[in-house]
Length: 202
Length: 129
Ligand SMILES: Nc1nc2c(ncn2[C@@H]2O[C@H](COP(=O)(O)OP(=O)(O)OP(=O)(O)O)[C@@H](O)[C@H]2O)c(=O)[nH]1
Ligand SMILES: [Mg+2]
Image 1 (cartoon, each protein chain N blue to C red):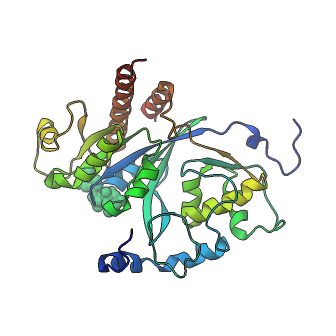
Image 2: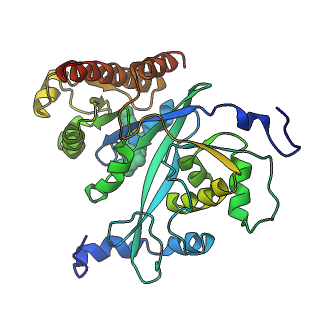
Image 3: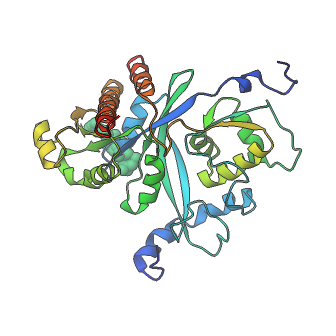
């Protein structure tokens, strides 16, 4: 092929595909920390502008007359190979932004729900959300210093999780630990996928 | 949301009403891209090394073409330009309509998750990091 001066040959190569995993959990539980620990750059931040109606997320028409708010999402990128790029998105904290969660969860491979044993209940809304959607998820208990030590099966019981849902310990600041959590999630998601396919009878 | 008169509603709305003015100006008030949907993780690459000020493009369009010399997701473009995602979608629509960018939608969609090779590739890729 012949490229004009201003054309770039790289543009003709197939673009990689992108996939995403969500990092959810209560306020201050370490979501952004985990995104940053395993991503290739510091976490980036992007914003969605919402109008007061809550519908038409990006509808800026007549914006002067409408009240708006913004929802910030932290995310990071991991280039896995020439044709695969993984994005990690920290979910916005407040429950009123469920429709932003819906956009994030669409097509996600799965989700990590971060939990702090000092305030376990903070992750209930995330768990309810992913259970309701059928999004594969794991619970990662973030090991803050001084946190009362729970056994993982106690956490499992306290969260009333399905027995198949993995519960692991992690340190969201450590790259290796964050990697392990993601791998646990992906293996779980694959297993779940297989189980569902069999249940569907094909 | 319907409860327009409720005080709780206004608390969160009023705090953040400011930063919207610039995005509104950047798109000329347009809310939707002329073409394309642009998922947050759609990948974008420029088809040219640069664009001039021709064909009614603004500085933000030019900035996107500059950024997308390296492959970027829609979310990354928005973060780097410090513009809301919706605004960036409108700008990308303008560029796509002129074939100035090439866009790859993500593999996983509402239609279903990718096949297990993708899961395996991600696991192997993570292990190799
Ligand atoms: N000791 C300890 N501190 C941590 C750990 N993970 C995060 N932190 C700290 O906890 C605080 C909150 O972490 P963030 O990553 O900002 O939490 P977040 O979930 O993104 O918070 P929001 O986005 O505000 O909901 C920061 O000061 C982190 O440095 C951990 O594993 N151990
Ligand atoms: Mg955060």
